[in-house]
Image 1: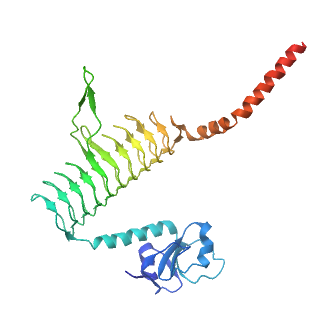
Image 2: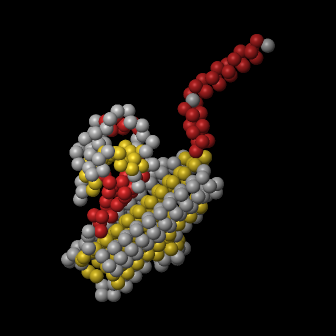
Length: 347
């Protein structure tokens, strides 16, 4: 597919500086792009490449002041990084929209309802009474259980498993190997010391615009729903336990775990390998640093915590600074103690 600078500018709301008819067919990093490729410059550290790159079209910030002439056609936008993301998203949509039809072999129950322009890859299983909206794309080796609903323009990548009764919203992307709706981890201790499994009869509800990375697990609720709200972004290799709620536009990085019935507010940012205990609340706008262990509710909105157990980020940095100086402080204390002993001996 080829696009002219003028067409690209129309998509991202930019202004062309140079030859508007210049065409590109692929993308490249500004430091290594070739003729016929499109690049972008958002980080000033890479500005020197602007004057040496072979890229044909470059998206730049409208505030950029050129230090010398540029051979490429420029498209100026308020935010080059955001505009480039918009363009990549549009490009991906175009490629995905080309997929349609049903490959063989598959199993699709006779009761399944399908919308228009649906793609179902080979070796997909779709159970009884499932509903697929318009433009849904299901890649090969995927399992869709009974009574699952997948709304318009959602993409289910290869090898995903969606258990019965789960609900997936519009424009959701679920990457390879993810499991949605597996049993929550619930057991009742018995008098003889054994553990009796508590049936998990709820489901998982994923609202519109959510993206879920590869090999993430979201457990079904014991009763009710495990809920991932609109716009949330979940990275690879996460564990989201039963009855958890993840708020609108919250972001959780890889290898983090959220224990059962914890409620995460909106616009929360959770770093990689963080662990959050169950039955607590994380206030809107909270920031949890990587590898932090959160053992109690964060009630103050927009606060930042770090460490294990996690506590205020600024206070934690001060504590770390003191900790690094402990050897010197110990030496000074010893010297002061000796000075006091010397003064007492002279009396």
